[in-house]
Amino acid sequence: MQRRKLLGAASLLAVLATLGLAPVIAQQEPMVFGLITPLSPPGETALGQLAKRGAEIGVEYINEKGGVLGRKVALSIHDSAGKNEQGVAAYRRLVSSEKAVAVFGFIHSGVNIAVNEVAKEMGVPTMGTQTGASDVTAKKYDIAFRTHAVDAPRAATWLGWIQKNKWKRVTVIAETTDYGIGLAKETEKQSKEKNLGLEIQTIMFDRTTTDLLPQLLQVKAFKPDAIVNVGVGQPLDLMITQAHTAGLLPGAQMVTSYDAPARPQFWQLHGDKGVGISFVAFYSPKSELSDLGKEFAKRYQAKFNEPPVYAALNGFANAIVFADAIKKANSTEPKAMIKALEEGSFTGWSTTPVTFPRAEGALWHNWSPPLMVLHYTAKDQTPATAEVAYVLAQ
Image (tube, rainbow, N blue to C red):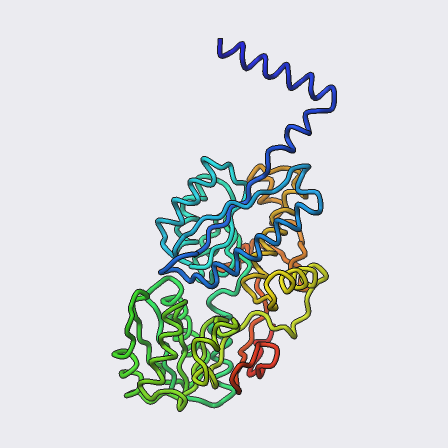
C-alpha cells in the first residue's frame, strides 16, 4: 500500500511538471536559514540582537529579489544564551527537523566550536558572525566558515596601539572562555616573539562573575599603563564601572577587545565614566561600504533610527553570502555549497570581496574585516566622531 502511495505521488508530480506547475509547489516551501545567536543571559544579548536585526533585513532583501532558486527564504531564530549545549541542540533541531541549509549568527566562540563538532558529521555549513577564537576555523573542517577577526590580528591591534603610545606595563584581564584564554595567550606570545619589552600581567575570571573588584585590586597593585578588557557583555561593562571604583580609571588606559562601546547604550550605562575608553573596532561609519552595504545601512537607519554597527552588518552579509553561494552552486547540497563558498568571491557590506581560502591555521575559510582602535575623548561621542587611535596595517 505504501509503495502504491509513493508511486501515485511520483506520477502526480510528473504530470504537474509536464504542466509547468511543479515549481509552484516547490516555491511554497521556503528554504530555511538558521540563526543561532545569544538572545538571553548569560550570553552577549546585545550582539545577538544586532546579528538578528542584520539577518532579518538580509532575508527580507533576498526575498524582495526573488528568493533563492525560485524559493523564498525563511529565517529560523534560535537562542544559544551563550551556552555550548544550547547552541548544539539548536543546530541539531535546525538540521534534523527544520531542514535548514545554512546556519550562522554565532557570537560566542565556544558555542561556534561546539556546534562545528556536530556540524562536521551532519554536514550543513556554519558561519561565525562574530567569533574570534582560532579553533572556530583552525581545525580545518569543511563545514566551518567565518567572517570575523581571529585572535592573532586582534592581539596585534592592541599591541600596536600600546607600542605607539610607548607604554610598558600592561594588564590583560580576560574571561575563562575559548575567546578570553586564546586572546590572553596570543598577547603574551606576540609580545615575546616581537621582543616588545612589555611587562604583562594576565588575570583570568569566570564569565558569570558579578564582582571583579578582587581582580581589579590586583591590577591596581601592578600599576599598569594600559588594561586590555577581554570581557564579553556584562563583564566588560562591569570591569569599566569597577575600575573607576578601584581608582584604576581614568589614570590607566583601557581598551576593550571588541566594539561594545560603539552601541548607543554605552553612554546610557556609563555616562561621564565612558570618556577615555578605547575599543577595538572592525567598522567605523567613516569606513567605505559596498553598494550592498550602503543599501543595508539605509534600511537599518530607517527601521531602527540609528546607524548600523558591525554585528548587524555581518549578520546581513552572512545571509547574503549564503544565498549567493547557493545560487552559484545551483544547489543546497552541502558539498556543492562548500565548493561554491571556497571558490567564489562574494559581495558583503565592505568594498573588500568576501572570500574563504583554504588557508593555514585560523585563516582557514576566514574573511577578516579591517581592525582599528577607536578612542572616546568626550561624552556621547559616536564611532563616527571618535578618535582613530590606531589602525592595523593590512
